[in-house]
Amino acid sequence: MSRPRRPSPRPSPRQSTPAAGPARLLLFNKPYDVLTQFSGGDGRATLKDFVDVPGVYPAGRLDRDSEGLLLLTSDGRLQARIADPRHKLAKTYWVQVEGEPDETALQRLRDGVELNDGPTLPAEVRRLDEPALWPRQPPVRFRKSVPTAWLELTIREGRNRQVRRMTAAVGLPTLRLVRVRIGPWSLEGLAPGEWREVPARLD
Image (cartoon, rainbow, N blue to C red; front, side, top):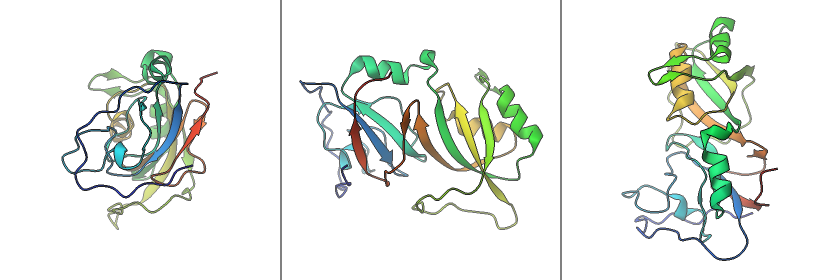
Protein backbone atom coordinates (compact mmCIF):
# COMPACT_ATOMS: atom_id res chain seq x y z
CA MET A 1 0.00 0.00 0.00
CA SER A 2 1.21 3.47 -0.78
CA ARG A 3 0.39 6.68 1.02
CA PRO A 4 -0.09 9.87 -0.96
CA ARG A 5 2.79 12.03 -1.93
CA ARG A 6 2.56 15.69 -1.10
CA PRO A 7 0.62 17.36 -3.94
CA SER A 8 2.70 19.65 -6.12
CA PRO A 9 1.19 23.07 -6.78
CA ARG A 10 1.65 22.92 -10.56
CA PRO A 11 0.92 19.48 -12.07
CA SER A 12 3.17 18.51 -14.96
CA PRO A 13 1.55 18.29 -18.40
CA ARG A 14 3.42 15.06 -19.14
CA GLN A 15 1.17 12.07 -19.88
CA SER A 16 1.79 8.60 -18.46
CA THR A 17 2.98 6.19 -21.13
CA PRO A 18 2.43 2.43 -21.21
CA ALA A 19 5.11 0.51 -19.35
CA ALA A 20 6.66 -2.75 -20.49
CA GLY A 21 6.25 -5.83 -18.35
CA PRO A 22 3.34 -7.60 -16.65
CA ALA A 23 -0.06 -5.92 -16.55
CA ARG A 24 -0.78 -3.94 -13.40
CA LEU A 25 -4.02 -3.03 -11.63
CA LEU A 26 -4.23 -0.47 -8.82
CA LEU A 27 -7.12 0.30 -6.49
CA PHE A 28 -7.05 4.00 -5.55
CA ASN A 29 -9.19 5.90 -3.06
CA LYS A 30 -9.68 9.18 -4.90
CA PRO A 31 -10.13 12.13 -2.56
CA TYR A 32 -12.64 14.89 -3.13
CA ASP A 33 -11.56 17.60 -5.62
CA VAL A 34 -8.96 15.41 -7.37
CA LEU A 35 -9.18 15.14 -11.16
CA THR A 36 -9.04 11.64 -12.69
CA GLN A 37 -6.20 12.49 -15.07
CA PHE A 38 -2.42 12.58 -14.90
CA SER A 39 -1.77 15.77 -16.86
CA GLY A 40 -3.07 19.31 -16.87
CA GLY A 41 -5.37 20.22 -14.04
CA ASP A 42 -4.83 24.00 -14.12
CA GLY A 43 -3.52 23.96 -10.56
CA ARG A 44 -5.94 21.32 -9.23
CA ALA A 45 -4.69 18.05 -7.79
CA THR A 46 -4.51 15.17 -10.27
CA LEU A 47 -3.68 11.48 -10.09
CA LYS A 48 0.03 12.14 -10.49
CA ASP A 49 0.05 13.81 -7.06
CA PHE A 50 -0.84 10.45 -5.49
CA VAL A 51 0.13 7.61 -7.86
CA ASP A 52 3.80 7.38 -8.87
CA VAL A 53 3.44 4.32 -11.11
CA PRO A 54 4.41 4.57 -14.78
CA GLY A 55 2.15 3.25 -17.50
CA VAL A 56 -1.18 3.01 -15.66
CA TYR A 57 -4.28 4.97 -16.58
CA PRO A 58 -7.86 5.19 -15.25
CA ALA A 59 -10.35 2.48 -16.13
CA GLY A 60 -13.39 4.75 -16.16
CA ARG A 61 -13.81 8.06 -14.41
CA LEU A 62 -14.95 9.52 -11.12
CA ASP A 63 -16.12 13.12 -10.99
CA ARG A 64 -13.99 15.74 -9.27
CA ASP A 65 -16.64 16.23 -6.57
CA SER A 66 -17.03 12.49 -5.95
CA GLU A 67 -14.82 10.26 -3.81
CA GLY A 68 -13.81 6.65 -3.54
CA LEU A 69 -12.72 3.73 -5.65
CA LEU A 70 -10.94 4.35 -8.93
CA LEU A 71 -9.20 1.58 -10.86
CA LEU A 72 -5.98 2.21 -12.77
CA THR A 73 -4.42 -0.33 -15.09
CA SER A 74 -1.70 -0.78 -17.69
CA ASP A 75 -3.77 -3.41 -19.53
CA GLY A 76 -5.84 -1.94 -22.36
CA ARG A 77 -8.12 -4.96 -22.67
CA LEU A 78 -8.83 -4.98 -18.94
CA GLN A 79 -9.45 -1.23 -19.04
CA ALA A 80 -12.05 -1.74 -21.77
CA ARG A 81 -13.82 -4.52 -19.86
CA ILE A 82 -14.03 -2.34 -16.74
CA ALA A 83 -14.96 0.95 -18.38
CA ASP A 84 -17.17 -0.11 -21.31
CA PRO A 85 -20.84 0.09 -20.22
CA ARG A 86 -21.67 -2.80 -22.55
CA HIS A 87 -20.16 -5.15 -19.95
CA LYS A 88 -22.57 -3.80 -17.28
CA LEU A 89 -20.03 -4.14 -14.47
CA ALA A 90 -21.75 -3.32 -11.18
CA LYS A 91 -20.65 -0.15 -9.41
CA THR A 92 -21.79 0.50 -5.84
CA TYR A 93 -22.00 3.93 -4.23
CA TRP A 94 -22.79 5.27 -0.78
CA VAL A 95 -24.84 8.38 -1.37
CA GLN A 96 -25.78 11.03 1.16
CA VAL A 97 -28.94 12.74 -0.05
CA GLU A 98 -30.92 15.75 1.04
CA GLY A 99 -34.40 14.81 2.14
CA GLU A 100 -36.13 11.76 3.56
CA PRO A 101 -36.35 8.86 1.07
CA ASP A 102 -39.69 7.10 1.03
CA GLU A 103 -40.50 3.76 -0.54
CA THR A 104 -41.96 5.44 -3.62
CA ALA A 105 -38.68 7.22 -4.38
CA LEU A 106 -36.64 4.06 -3.77
CA GLN A 107 -38.90 2.01 -6.03
CA ARG A 108 -38.52 4.56 -8.83
CA LEU A 109 -34.74 4.10 -8.62
CA ARG A 110 -35.17 0.33 -8.64
CA ASP A 111 -37.41 0.51 -11.69
CA GLY A 112 -35.22 2.98 -13.58
CA VAL A 113 -35.81 6.72 -13.90
CA GLU A 114 -36.20 8.91 -16.95
CA LEU A 115 -33.25 11.24 -17.52
CA ASN A 116 -32.68 13.75 -20.31
CA ASP A 117 -30.61 11.14 -22.18
CA GLY A 118 -33.15 8.36 -21.73
CA PRO A 119 -34.29 5.95 -19.03
CA THR A 120 -31.75 4.30 -16.76
CA LEU A 121 -31.46 0.60 -16.19
CA PRO A 122 -32.98 -0.66 -12.95
CA ALA A 123 -30.77 -0.02 -9.93
CA GLU A 124 -30.33 -1.80 -6.62
CA VAL A 125 -30.96 0.58 -3.73
CA ARG A 126 -31.49 0.40 0.01
CA ARG A 127 -31.44 2.72 2.99
CA LEU A 128 -28.11 2.75 4.80
CA ASP A 129 -27.13 3.72 8.33
CA GLU A 130 -24.59 6.53 8.26
CA PRO A 131 -21.33 4.79 7.27
CA ALA A 132 -18.04 5.26 9.13
CA LEU A 133 -16.27 7.40 6.53
CA TRP A 134 -13.40 9.86 6.72
CA PRO A 135 -14.38 13.53 7.07
CA ARG A 136 -14.70 15.22 3.72
CA GLN A 137 -12.55 18.27 3.04
CA PRO A 138 -14.20 20.69 2.60
CA PRO A 139 -17.17 19.51 4.66
CA VAL A 140 -20.58 19.00 3.07
CA ARG A 141 -22.83 22.03 3.41
CA PHE A 142 -26.09 21.14 5.11
CA ARG A 143 -29.35 22.99 5.53
CA LYS A 144 -30.29 22.68 9.19
CA SER A 145 -33.99 22.61 8.38
CA VAL A 146 -33.70 19.70 5.91
CA PRO A 147 -32.92 16.10 7.00
CA THR A 148 -30.36 13.95 5.21
CA ALA A 149 -30.13 10.22 4.64
CA TRP A 150 -27.71 7.65 3.21
CA LEU A 151 -28.43 5.21 0.41
CA GLU A 152 -26.48 2.31 -1.04
CA LEU A 153 -26.99 2.43 -4.81
CA THR A 154 -25.70 -0.08 -7.37
CA ILE A 155 -25.84 0.67 -11.10
CA ARG A 156 -24.55 -1.07 -14.21
CA GLU A 157 -24.13 1.91 -16.50
CA GLY A 158 -21.59 4.71 -16.74
CA ARG A 159 -23.36 7.87 -17.83
CA ASN A 160 -22.03 11.28 -16.94
CA ARG A 161 -22.93 12.16 -13.32
CA GLN A 162 -25.54 9.42 -13.44
CA VAL A 163 -26.05 8.79 -9.72
CA ARG A 164 -26.45 12.49 -8.97
CA ARG A 165 -28.97 12.86 -11.78
CA MET A 166 -30.91 9.78 -10.67
CA THR A 167 -31.32 10.91 -7.07
CA ALA A 168 -32.25 14.43 -8.20
CA ALA A 169 -34.91 12.96 -10.50
CA VAL A 170 -36.68 11.42 -7.49
CA GLY A 171 -36.39 14.57 -5.37
CA LEU A 172 -33.29 13.60 -3.38
CA PRO A 173 -30.33 15.83 -4.31
CA THR A 174 -26.95 14.22 -3.69
CA LEU A 175 -24.76 15.89 -1.06
CA ARG A 176 -21.89 13.39 -0.93
CA LEU A 177 -21.03 10.52 -3.24
CA VAL A 178 -18.51 7.77 -2.44
CA ARG A 179 -17.90 4.81 -4.75
CA VAL A 180 -17.13 1.77 -2.62
CA ARG A 181 -17.08 -1.12 -5.11
CA ILE A 182 -16.53 -1.87 -8.80
CA GLY A 183 -17.29 -5.46 -9.74
CA PRO A 184 -15.17 -7.67 -7.42
CA TRP A 185 -12.96 -4.80 -6.20
CA SER A 186 -13.63 -2.95 -2.97
CA LEU A 187 -12.47 0.27 -1.34
CA GLU A 188 -12.06 -1.49 2.00
CA GLY A 189 -8.82 -0.69 3.85
CA LEU A 190 -7.84 2.34 1.78
CA ALA A 191 -7.73 5.83 3.26
CA PRO A 192 -8.19 8.82 0.94
CA GLY A 193 -5.16 9.19 -1.34
CA GLU A 194 -3.93 5.62 -0.75
CA TRP A 195 -3.65 2.85 -3.32
CA ARG A 196 -2.76 -0.83 -3.42
CA GLU A 197 -1.94 -3.23 -6.22
CA VAL A 198 -4.00 -6.34 -6.92
CA PRO A 199 -3.81 -9.07 -9.59
CA ALA A 200 -4.67 -7.60 -13.02
CA ARG A 201 -7.56 -9.83 -13.96
CA LEU A 202 -11.35 -9.84 -14.01
CA ASP A 203 -12.58 -13.37 -13.32
